[in-house]
Length: 331
Image (spheres, rainbow, N blue to C red):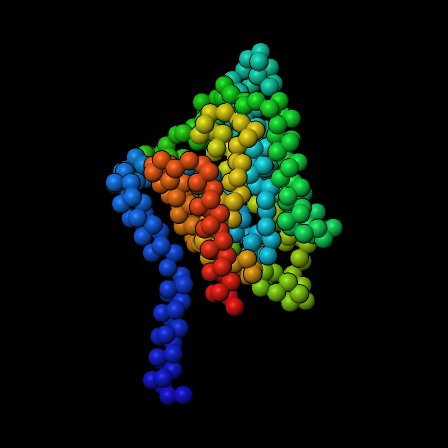
């Protein structure tokens, strides 16, 4: 092959890589412009855009955990329920002291409910990883069982009622801002940057991709598959716990029904962002943009006056289309 031909081949390859990497950004831009036109410009109003970015935090944080899981050919259906468990546990420890509080007339440092909520999510994730790695239970089945069990635990712990009257410091995590930037956005950004570094610049990140690319080859190369699986699902549960604290702080209460259906939004965000169900492929930034698309869709449909039932149909169709495109791309 001549030098000129080789250079042309590299150029074509580079263009293809560029398109694969940045097409999702173009989709987001077109999607936002389309929603703006459909809503008569309401979608692009500054306050609405701020609301979209603030509300995407919980979905985005969970979607980041889901990205790690899907890259390794797994799935986690329990994240919404773990979010609820984290929310009710954290808020029960963040109530203003009173006779009607979960822990009557007791006051805890703000760090206690935060640690407890995150730990609750992480424990649920650890349990998922242990069941999958130790007993060879399919991720779909293990996390489906956890989805039901964790939701039940959230309802039992809260007596089926929202836990309210929270310390203003706790609510700040969901409602406050620092130098004009909403706290949920700051937390989301920190989580995204940290996850990107872990996935791309650490040995653990290389193991994640290796397991998803070829589990048998990863095992032969010396990667501890069981340990990695437990860590991945624990991380996913931990991030669900963080999302639960943000969600509870945003509404000012710990509702045991929080997070219902958010697992589908998280899966959709990851897949739209380029994470493949075939494993071994996925990026954090793609998932972040996918989450922005999903939240933009949610907000746009509300502005258009469409009810929740229509939103479910639309998001279901998007999941199917994304999977079909993923299948065609990775043939």
